Length: 269
Image (cartoon, rainbow, N blue to C red; front, top):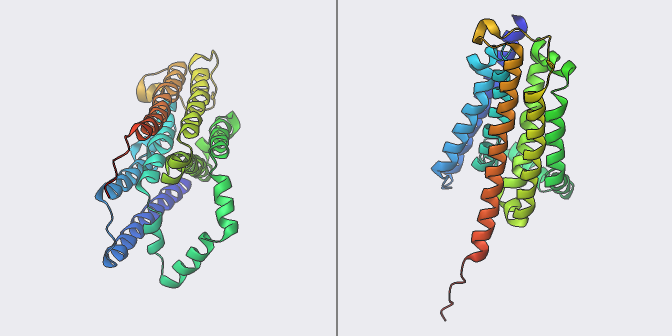
């Protein structure tokens, strides 16, 4: 009970801090006359809510006993919350939530050559794809998965280690600078990610053994056997996950082709 209370408290406090920082930054920028598009705020709100669902809703408690609900938690974080945060572009708003002196220090640090070089390397699509894939496969190792089920700190670490590489991954592909720099490379990175996640989902779905026999029996909650529960979890990773990655890849490729095919407007002198 103590661990569960601490987990919930950390999540609520973190969620409140993020929401408050966004509101403060919005107010300060608006006071400076900087217009913030409503769709950006809507994207941020949707991302914030999707990030809360896996940790502060009944889904979190049920996910300890039902594997496919646990998988749904991860998919919400990786496939919905993370790309929505990236598309919302809340960085400048969070920066303006800081006190002026702190903001100036952070700004100087962000524009420093070493910081820019480190960020550029970390958000290279190849690096981001590898980090994203490694985290996903690593946490499905039985001992780590068991730790996440039995320990609130380990479960919190699991969520953070999913969302942070996912944010890097989606930023490396969907940020304006990356989309303009190499849209076809970004689309290929998404295709590669779709392949490796679908492979993990397929292995879960067709496996003849139970991967996590130490987990609680799902039957009293949802009427499913362990095999059925595992198969549904695998299908959730395999099919919806693959659809999201492929849809994003096709959107990037299609956007690139549309921009290339736009006729040049005649110049008037």
